[in-house]
Amino acid sequence: MSKLFTRLQGALLERRTIRAIVWFVTFGVLLYLGAVFWSGWHATVAAFAGLGLQTLVISAVVSSSSYLWRFARWEYSLQCLENVVPRFTHLAVYMSGLALTATPGKSGETFRSALLVPHGVKVTHSLAAFLVDRGSDVLGMALLGTLAAMMAGQHLAWVWLLAFIALLLASCLFAWILSHPKAHIGWNRLGHSLAWLPVKGGQATLEAWAKVWKIPRVSAFAVVAMLAYGTQALVFAWFCQMLETGVSTADCVLIFVQATLFGAASMIPAGLGIMEAALVFQLVQHGVSDATAMSLAIAIRLVTLWFGMSLGALSLLLLSGRNLGAK
Image (cartoon, rainbow, N blue to C red; front, side):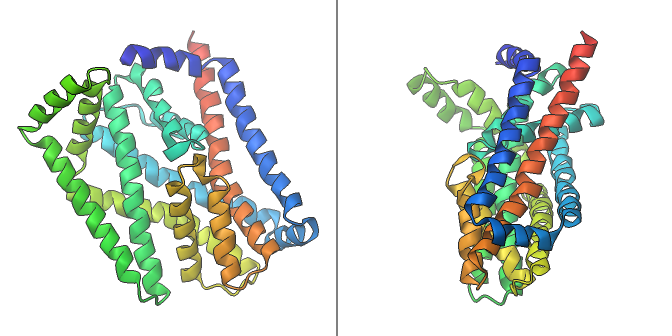
């Protein structure tokens, strides 16, 4: 598997591949701007003018701070598996993964594995860290939903808390089962019945994940995810206040959380179109005009998803330049 990822690394760092990724991000941004025309030019431009370029730039920088929280979690996960990579190089590798965020379940981010192989990181370990990321993100969103629902005074806030507790305990129970001394019996049976699948690689990945996935550690990871997504949700709330929508901060955070989860559940790459529709629908339900709601959805996705992907493409360019320079 490592040989495969080594070849993949070489392909990823080719100028042709880098250009394709940069063009993909550029096309995505232009497509988003095209949505401005589709949703009603005059009203939408007026809404963007209400936000202002300075607000968009500041919000992009603030939203991007969440990637530092996520990187700290990622780096610590790999350290738990006894992997140490030079910090700035590791940060560049992590940020490069954002270039392919627009894939189902963010699975494109797993190409970090190819970039980490030369630094002695096993593919199974980096894939395990990816699973830790995705799992703790879900827990963090449930925690953020609990907090927002309580602040908004919703009677069903307990449902969010129950979901968090259930997911935490169920996942930790699964990790315990994977770590049980007799778990290899089940893996051997699975390997014999599914010989055409890379069961051994899956076993090594899940066992590495289980080693990291402990209740105290996962609880801390969930808080990190809550802070990361909470930062972006507060930026969305700021946008709503700037345009005087009349929607409370707590409701804005809850709208953002629900739209994000709905987009993720759709399994459409980055929830494109689905998350925006969920944002617009909920805002309209709160009395916001269609054009303003569309502008808010486009604005928050520009400063979160597309700005993050742009940073990822830039990081990949820097890594490829260093790699080519070394050659």
